Image (cartoon, rainbow, N blue to C red):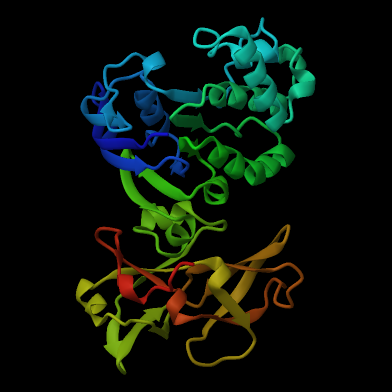
Length: 368
């Protein structure tokens, strides 16, 4: 199998810049999720690799060979779309086999269709046309068609977006092992951060056509490169407060919602950055009835049950509001209660307020 490389790739449509200086390498058998909000350039990127568009700048290589300018059928690419894109007049079997018939004999095609359909648990619907298939069966048929030719590179454009919640959950569990078995270099586009974290070995975060961070899922959640990335991961979203850290007793301290709070800081150079955003995830907040060090007084404004957890809207004395996520059934789940809010200093993130970039890389807890 082959390595996929994108070197300083750029693409524009008139005045709209869809990709800029995009560089990324995907190893054989590796799954990289391309994650970002709608309009960030994810699908344009896949279509450049597949040959539907050509990049304006940069190069795209598969196995060390440039594929820019090569026709799609000569690129060694398999692709599955979010809308399935099945031929409506063909059976599932013929849809799966359609891309292979020009390259292999009838016996080999039949054998491969049988093998891939058994793997994806759709052998019982091979004679059905798309209108007779459920969305889950359509999704598996499209995936089988992309996999059957043993492509060097597999491009998946939000393939689970149009399937029901139960199947989406099941496929999140099944897809990683299935895709790694193919040994292809996989780019998996999604707008769902949970899906990206569940499926990918690494996540490439796109914002406005720019690659802003590439890292393991747990690292991106724990050490986002910027405020923009931090906001994209987590539900509820990260809490942010304007602070100006100062050196205090060998560490850092900041006023948060009118309360002096100690921050973890192995790198006191953070102070040199001046005004910062302090970020604390709702899951990292601890709610109690007792005052004490680092305890910020607040009032619970509202409680929203969310399956396995309850989300509390907290209002501090200065009028600012944060969200806390507590296990469902927690004793601190009553509106209008007065409480104290704490967080462990090592769970806090600091971002430069002018640039939005994270500062103090050394003090954040290590990702597993």
